[in-house]
Image (cartoon, rainbow over all chains, first blue to last red; front, side, top):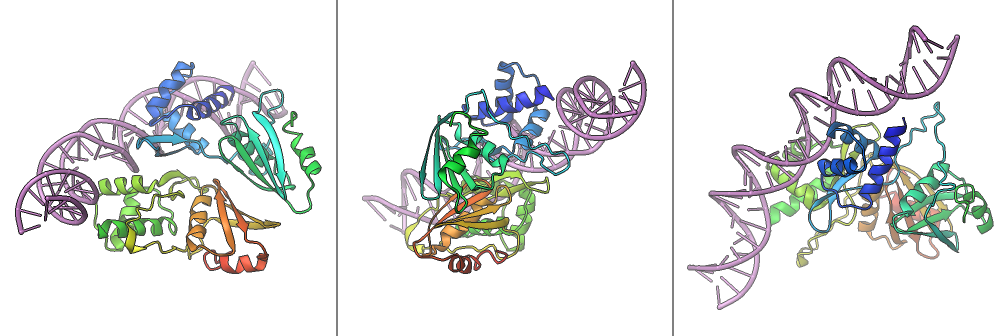
Length: 160
Length: 160
DNA sequence: AGCCCATTAGCATAAATATGCAATTATGAA
DNA sequence: TTCATAATTGCATATTTATGCTAATGGGCT
């Protein structure tokens, strides 16, 4: 489904750049971008994206993205395409190492998406990732060298 | 207010040991423990605790604790008891080590709660934690062995 | 093409959640 | 204590969100 995926992506973009406090508000933003849908559909989209409503610093409710959206890799379907942001801008800025930790700097708001892609690949070289807004931390498996990590990361971050 | 603080604590305990999917359900649990309140009050409590509603693995909605709940430090009382998730529902999936870092994988959305519990225990073996959605990173103090860490963690994660 | 099965989406509405207001109760200062 | 101010709560209800049902759409097959 072309439209839906594009819409989900749009939702993520909006949520990461606006303070949205209810679904109707988000609906309006989506309308501005040409998406036509109802609150019912939006509710289901948000559920699928595992978006949560929480309280912002200003005291208002606010929808926020979480990482780890279960992309059905329930075996059979073999979906699991590591959506590499190939020719696209993936926000990557730099990578540095300290012991068995790698720190990737990204442009603001890109960290979550990047970490998400990395996670999806399930590289055995990486035990886990944590993402902030512009920083991704990777814990390397024991014995993995910097160059080995760079090699696998290059498959999804060509410009690394 | 004695009652309210105790109630908030009770809410945290319940949420970390039960799968609660709506406020009425939580209300019933609180009643069992002797707390009398209305849904309106509960809604306000949850807001104050910054609890969020998300989707569990079973597909049902579920309330989960987030880390960083502003503990109203009303000084003297030194409440702050670490609530261990004693039953098996703490979301724990696996733990791996790399050097002085441990990475705990949890079911989606459980990481914050788990990290919160770990933090509360203030184990000297752990310098600090970082939590994402389904990943907790622990930085071990120097000289702490894997087995030593497992031993202390077992006190709050029996199924580790 | 035509058929099948899964996905998607709207409508209407149920279910769930948040909140204005008023009353009550606690907290603090003089 | 007494007054003033802030916090807490219930009630009733507005607002917000989720969902059962059905129709429409979209691939993937042969």
